[in-house]
Length: 348
Image (tube, rainbow, N blue to C red; front, side):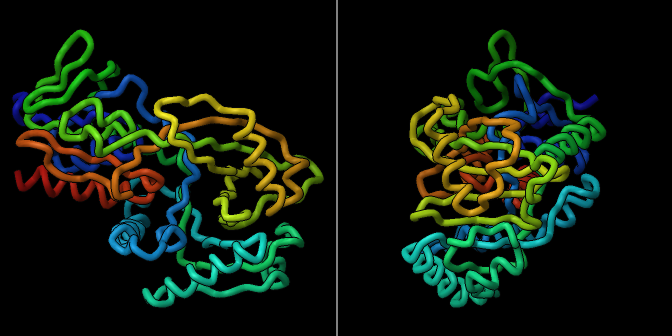
């Protein structure tokens, strides 16, 4: 029988925690995942963009390199979990006004210096590619290598994959994490290694993470095209609307994910009227026909921000690992994070 000292406890059941638990269990380890509501939170409402190139800005080359490494692993990662998770049609980045067009030029030049392929598109060329783009949009870039994933199908696949690999689920709130144990409200999970992967809540679980990880609120909308309305775009559309970032991510069945606001407001997860109004106003300036769509869902999640916008994936002390602080890139970095945690546990 395997003793507690050989068990790995993963704290957090978002995309990072589930990916880590699934990968560790696939290596033959005994794994317990602790989360009162796995497959929820920020991972459940994410846009699903796997787009390190279109997130790239000068000064963030290390983050870009990590994202590019992870996106290379995504096809195999998705194939292991099941088909139909990925959309490989690429990304359009569009600019609404002259200042936004200038920002796109800076981004295109930066990506060119990094050897990344981007194609500049005029307003006419944009609408030839995606006819629903507003006539007032000035210019754009096409990035063919970007992927997107259906986040909810991914979470379901990870849950099922963890169950198939024998991961045990403990649905209780976590109080703290230390060497050899995870303290819960009314019990304790003994383990040889604990992995803190609790997203925005990680900072309160171990003192080494205090000040390194913080909640960053983001609101999203899910819309659905109705009969007679123009269908959603075929690929992800990212936009700058008077310097405000926006994304439109298509989903099967005529659905469209619109996001996302970004606020530093602690653990407030209410959806605000102004947040919904701002998202809809900006989105209609990019894709006017969505005014005819049905509003299916509005939600807010708390991303795990970090001090340098890069995740914390390392030992905090002997027996305690962190895999948190992924901010906007939790889904993107899930494969590389899971592989890195497996390497750290294996070399312990």
